[in-house]
Picture 1 (cartoon, rainbow, N blue to C red):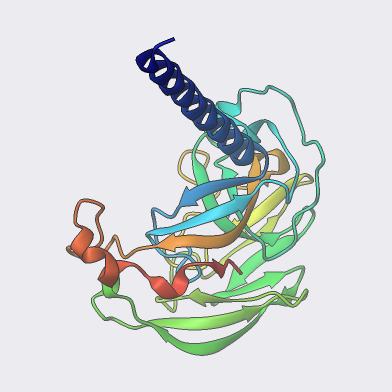
Picture 2 (cartoon, helix red, strand yellow):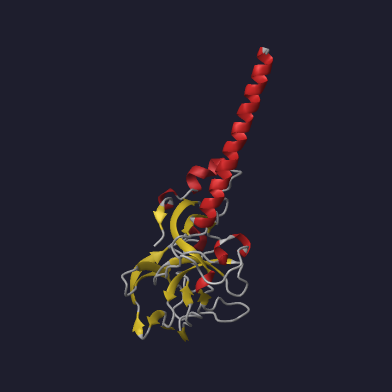
Length: 257
């Protein structure tokens, strides 16, 4: 056999090994995405300042088990959940919007099945008890042109604490309810209270309403990348010279709480 023939066979073998490695990597990535962790990005400011536009995060599908909406396009048609676990009050979750069962939303769970929720003067009440809320300075972001937004720290009965923004003292959703959460459903609210379409809006055409348990996709766990995409002239993949300045380095690998 000639040297050229041996070289050709070695080249063919190397090419086949490369293809096999790529295929195995793709299969592994699909398995991880479907059954373990799915990446999402934040397109709106409804969860400021917990989550900002331009945050990229991993959502754990193991947290609540699997429903049909755990799979792409809901292609596995079954009802309920398998290996299900109940979410906790205060969890930040991705779910399918109930009115179309296709759009991904991310909000915080404040109401569990059977809870009564109402809001008075911006303060959330759960089963007749006000959620602890104290002023915690202001949020100032470039997307607000430097305008400070009042920030508050809320603490739930189970000890979960987080910051919310409430710009308007008498906003549209500052005095609403009561809502009684149906069995098998959850009540969602955004942390940016005056700029969040959530369970406070019950309109079947424009609202979120109560979210069925099977619509939960998973719990937000960690921000793996963040860039200031909503600032004028900010981060863009085609402008690598902006990357060092517009990547939010301090947010990378921070936990979602």
